[in-house]
Length: 159
Image 1 (tube, rainbow, N blue to C red):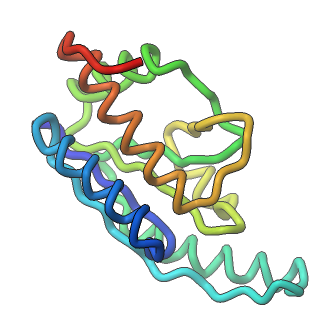
Image 2: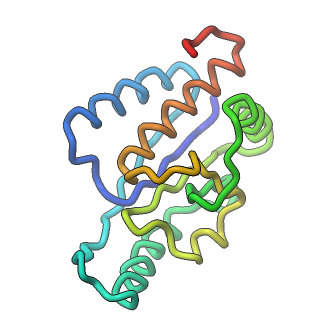
């Protein structure tokens, strides 16, 4: 069974969002061994300077980079990445599953990911040209993983 890890900066705070996320985690249990690791986010005041934001991104990057494993395929979520359709994403997941024992997805905090994390990633994935809150990105990623596994297994799923 494919191992999938999600490294996410910050905790889910909204009860409803946590419930929906839990539902997809449960559904994915049929297809993969899923683990979500929430890493501490840096508190950044609304009026923080650019230098302060860069410092917080650097601190978050250190937390992320220490959790990465050398034999895992690493996917960073970033709006400047590639935005495959669901079928292409499923094809990618299927291809990776035969080549890598583990796939790690990285979701940054409200200010995104530090360039060091993006440079370390094997693939940069964009969920959309639109911007989503990082907590909602987790739910969207889980739904797309579930959809990918349904496609891979030729199972029906609503459109």
